[in-house]
Amino acid sequence: MAFKHPLAAVFILFLGICGAISSARAEPLEIVGFGDSLMAGFGLGPDEGFTQKLEAALRAKGHDVTIANAGVSGDTSSGGLSRLDWSVPDGTQLVILELGANDMLRGVSPDITQKNLDAMLAKLKQRKIAVLLAGMRAAPNLGADYQNGFDAIFPKLAEKYGVPLYPFFLDGVAGEPALQLEDGLHPNAKGIDRMVERILPDVEKAIAVIQGNS
Image (cartoon, rainbow, N blue to C red; front, top):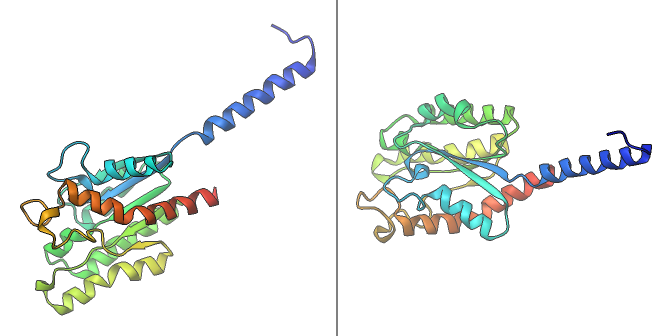
């Protein structure tokens, strides 16, 4: 069907462009939670994991987000580095990077952990994906030298790459049996609630920076 007036065609085209722009803006912000069993939701029900509850908390505060769970139980920083490229798809705008706990439990040298996390941060920076680095702390029974070396990894890398640091992913849960599973390592559902409550302001800040730069 031919338009009888050129202005009509222009008007229809304009409406189409506006609709496309509006549709693009309506797409949710894509977040990936990349980590080990603490991110994966070990021992928890389908809606009790960290990524699910964080997404629900953000949406309740008006943020249009989706959070993919890229946690793998037992993963070390070496394993995370090997799967980073395919675990974080194109279009991801923010990665919550949480790895290192299994390195620590296995006594892996902090130098190796730092090297692997450094490589992951470099890859994500190259892809222009924002990162919120979730830190971990070493158990005191590993000795002061190991503890000092491990604990220093996360602030060093956050400073090097200019990314925000959430100092301790298990803040408020570690050492609290009522918030942990029977293994004394992983959070239970109530523990996840506390973790989400504590980290939520930092995630909101990261989202605000992304939206401010877009």
